Structure formats: C-alpha cells, structure tokens
Length: 477
Image (spheres, rainbow, N blue to C red):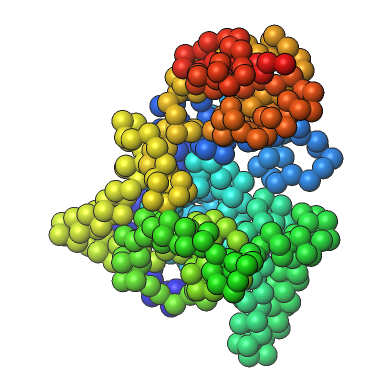
C-alpha cells in the first residue's frame, strides 16, 4: 500500500530543507494575523497570561502552560511570549507533520512537504492554533510519538517513544485518550497479523505498554487517581432530569455542532474521499475521533464531552487523504503537463478558501454565531471587540489597580482574564449591574467595583473613572 502511494515530484527540496520549510511557512502563516493585532490573539489566550501569575513549578500543569510559566518565572514578559510562542508551536506542528508522514506513510519528500503545508494552512489547524495552545503543542508530541513507533527497534528507541507518549498525555487530555486508543488498537492488529515474528510480538508488547502508560499518567497525574472525576469530565448526558427525554440544551447545541462540522470539513471531505487509502493507523484515528465528535448526535444519552474539540483532531487524517488525491494530479508537473498542475492548484486553493477568510485583516470582527462561537471568522482578534475597546478596558483596570489594593472587580465575560492578568484585585465575571453576584458581594461587606459601559448611576453605583466607552463604578454603601 505505502509503496504504491509514492509520488515523484521532480525538483522539490531535499529533506533538511523540507524540514526547514515545514517549520518556517506555518510559523509565518500563524504570525500574519498576530502581526495585525496589538494584543496576543485568541479568545482563550488571556487565560494563559493569567495562569503565569499563579504558576507553581512543583504542581501539575499542561506542557504548554508549564513552559510558559517557567519562561515567565525566568523574567520574560508573558505578554510578549504569547505574541510569538503560538507561531513557533504552529511551525513545530508543520515539522512534526512532515516527520510523521515521512516515517509512517513513507511518502516522498516533496509529497510529505506538500501535505504538511496544506494541513497546517487549513482553517481547522489555524483555529486550534488561535487559542487552543495546549492542544496545538500536544499534537506535536502526538505526531512525534506515532512517527517514532514506526522505527522503534532498540531499547533507546522505546525509551524515547515512551517519553514522547508521556509528553503527549501531559499536554492535553483528549490527545492522551486518542493516543492510548491508537496504540492499543495497533497492538491488537500486530498480534493478529504477527505470523510468528519475534519483532512484531515485541513491538506489539511495547505498544500495549505505552498505551497503558498513557492511561496511567492520565488517571494518576492529571486526575490524581479519581476515576469518577475522569469519567465525569469525559462524558455527559443530555437526558432531561425531569423526564426521559432529551434536554433543551441538546436541541440548542445540535445545529451549531453540525454547522461547525460542515464548516470545518465540508470541502476537504469531498476531496479526502477521492484520495482515501488503506492505512490502519489513520483509519483508527478517523474512526475514534469521528465517533467521539458525532457522539452528541449518535448517542446523546451518554456521549463524549467537548465534541467540538474532538472534531478538531480529525484534520490530520482528512488532509492526508486530500493531499493524496491532489498529488495524483500534481504528479503531472514532472512531465510539465500544465493541465494536471492547474487542476491540483485549483483544488488546493478551494480547500484554503476558509483560511483566506480567517486571515483577512479587514474581515468581520466576530465569532461565527451559527457555530455557537466555536470558530473565529477572523484570526486577528482576541475577543469580539476591537483592539481599541480592549485597550480602553485594560487601561480602566490598570487605573483601578493603582488606586486600591482591595475589593472585588466585576467585568463582562470577554474581559475576565485580561482583567485578572492586569490587576491584583479579585476579578469576577458578571452580566450587568443588576447581576445577583454583585448584590451578594456587596452583602458580604466587600468593596465592589464594576467595569461597565455606562448608565449604572441610577442602579446604586458611583462613577470613578472614564476610559473610552467604559466606566469604572464603585457600589454605594
């Protein structure tokens, strides 16, 4: 199968140059939207900034968070780090993809580079790099683990692969579960097809051991041995507690999830079907992640939690199949046949239409409502507000922090972690001046402040500071 997939692409770079391109091109693509915005981009990115102020090197943290925390502890500015680290991580993803394709699928250098670049330029890969930084770095270790399994022959190889597997599990829980499922499934296949070969038996035992090691790390290190907490985090039911019918929340979420899947994979799926090939690992990967993503529709009574995050794990096999289909026409370049080359270019450009939209600095500044705010329509942003509005909010929080060292500050949800990172006060989210949480804080005797757009004077608040459209208020009494 793998020998039949080899495609000769004349004149393309040799392997060391290909690794460099596989790193540099995705890094530049990811840096482009960041260069258009004065703050680190990504909806959840402020949480990573906030985390650095509470970092403890002796406690568990996901790999990306731990690296960021160590660098911040060494004196580097977390704000600057988050401007550059995601682009570097996306570049590492490109290099890891190239390594995985070369070692596992044994494609030629040119075809492997094309697949790596097409995959990292996809809208799904860029959406993950936008604010799911732990998952993005985890995918790097995930691909390195799967690639190293192919060439593991000596004890040193097994040790390196095991370390990479642990780094994957430490980076992201969903990737840990997927990796364990793939390692164990590959072990069972090797046992089924072993034909008495000692090497196959040894590799099968190693895969089983690695899968068990990942499961043990996930349970013991991440969830501290609490299996009930792991299951509660990993699964949920949309059954209404009042009666044996599906809850209103399920009906509210089904349309956004379906819209997300169509947006993320609608175009590439059509091409991937044409380029599908038989590979045990990619097939198992597609089945496990696909069933998990669709479980909210297939079996909502007890389905996998965070199905949107599971759907984001499908982009590697989907674009591997699509790359195989496109390279068939692209192979005509070696014979200087223009027509197949144009066909390949047209298909590639069609698949990247969503990417062009996301990278457009003049595009609409919003999250796509139909996907329930799960997919950005524009990457060069950190929230659904403009950079100037976010700057005004941060200036207001800085002013309050300079004026007082005690009290509770309530802010709209979009500004929660930006405010928590920028202030030493206790920061909480609220929906408006009449929120019950504000009243409870006042009754507890706290000094209560709110960041709001105005109009709170008649609701028992005194204005203290004006910053653009924002007002900093203090609760009377």
